[in-house]
Image (tube, rainbow, N blue to C red):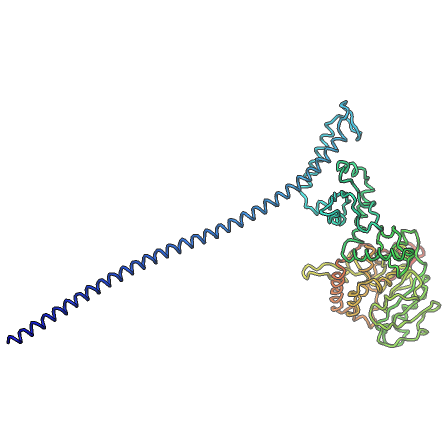
Length: 573
């Protein structure tokens, strides 16, 4: 029993030891749990601190963006201030110029002797009048400076100062020429462009840049007629030689060519008058009366006869004596001004024998060009010896009186295209391009070469001086040759063609070629040609006109025997 009791007590001691160990483990576990909570608390604190740092960083980023926006605003304000400063500088310079002008006016109108008299201007009454006028001049100049835009101010100015730029020359010179303002040059020793052939003394005023106070007096010494002439000359020089890079290059090449061929060089009067030296093609002639735009200025008249050039593009069917061509040649042969008839046969049908055409005693020549392009009718020919060419379509119904009347009118205007069928062009805002129109309106800008008379030089210019892309466009479309000729003539003469009488219909209504000019696609194609030509040339040279010329006593209620062209009144409109 004693042994069992001792063993039982030993087990109890072991159990208590285990219990003590368990409590120790529990205590260690609680300590670990406490440490874990401390770590968790520390982590939460770190997270809170991190969040605070993130918030601070975001605030800093927002502040930096705000600073950047403020910086851009400051930059914009600085740019505006710089612009305003530049304007103020410009205004100050102009006011300084105004002050100089006013001081000069005040000097001219003031009282030099102190006796109440006037000097220079013939005014009386002391300094009050001069002071008022000086103040008025100052107000006018300052108002113009502050009110008008730069380009508007130049276009409304008579004289424009052209000081030297960074170099001796200045781009302002060309700006002033384009605006039609008389350049007042302030650049000693400046050699103006093309001065070898251009007489700049008729266009510009040279002033010594060291003597600025003399400029007002120089300007006032130019009278009204001189001002008008000089402003006109600025436009002549600008339009002919400086309005495009192409013209500048061509003018340079022509000056070099004149140096080489001195015996055939163009006179200076040609370079300094309209239409300018670039319009005088020396491959045509070096004799000025051979050019249409010099006949009237030289007091000369063109040759007294014309050559009829008839273009046949269809030919017709049936007997030759029933065709409109046969009737047209009979009317031409009765004209008292015709020299020769040339039939240009571009039809795919075989050409008839010349003997079958009723030219009577008038020489007739039928030619079949190798190229059936519409431009064939405008090719120069050694058969044409007259100044005037009467260009006609095969189905035209003009009478002999109409032919003679047209030639009589053209003899007065030898540089123009004169004829019967008129057309016009206008800008289509909806489509953003030029549009060709055959509507009967109060104005026109083209006269079709189907019934028109003009100088033979235009055939030479059309063939040898037209830009190659334009001739290629005519050949590709088989159309628009008449539009191109009108554009070329207007670009040189800067004048519109001339329409004759009230006739609307000039084609034979029974013509087999009538489908061409009744097809809607025909007008769309011609509108496309207008846009192509204007794009290639860089501008639209056609000009509108409201002029229509009728015979004397036309439709007047007087005896028919008093009228020269009696048959024209019998033609309906």
